[in-house]
Image (cartoon, rainbow over all chains, first blue to last red):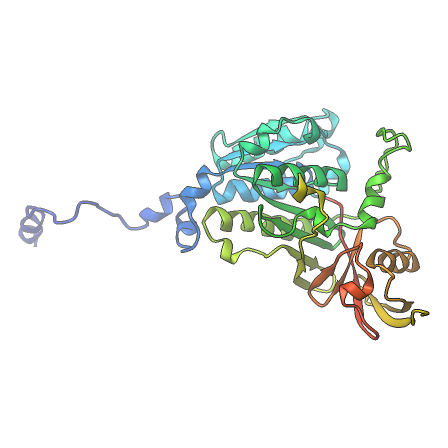
Length: 276
Length: 82
């Protein structure tokens, strides 16, 4: 028996590569590579601008890191509050006491999961961030909590010609909107007087942001998880060259009644975003 | 010529409740949203109205938006939180 093995091992091997049982378990993205439409290499090189590091930002950040995105900029000016802790994976009670910036903690969390330096934080209001931030990104993820910031990010992304995926939620309902310039509708095309009313409540009659209208919205983590998963999956499809699989523009989710439905928003010919 | 009023139903997507609304062709979708939101005490949030799969533009008159007698529109929240 020993002689037989020696005889075989002395033959030149026709194969260039050698494999061992369960070698694939040494590859972090082995299971992702088995999904035929997913381009893991393209995902690792895509520059993601994530605006907002609250509940959606935490969940989306986790999904980005685990999906293999390795070039992420997280923008948020806020610091952690204890009430954030029921929905935010990367925040701890001590972060609230220390008034830590949400963007820094989410970037740190992403780096921890990714096993390297994949994310950086910007702790300024997005309205003050340089427009280079949009031009220098490949895709923009909106994890915001107010209409005004959404309108700004929508406009900037559109002008820079970048895919914008925006999420919004309250309680058990939410929606995801996909904006693909130069085609189709943008976020603002779907807005109406009720959005303007909500936005105006942030301002005094002089137009100065002196009246802070911040209603305490109902929020819970399962809705956040569902929406953030959809948002990151849409970006993964786009990055993998599969726009044909993406939402046409809006997905409405109602967790109370177990409804998820794609809705159509048509482009508004009067929308200012398309005229600038 | 006096415009003829017509009736539609508006459904509250969150509760499933419906309300009948009497309108005229030149009423706008914004007016439908505002009336329905006020009726259900929803003034503080942003909403859209859908007919079937289509979200109707706020500034559109009902006639232009293709809204007719006996149509069912749905008031859907556009949540602000993140």
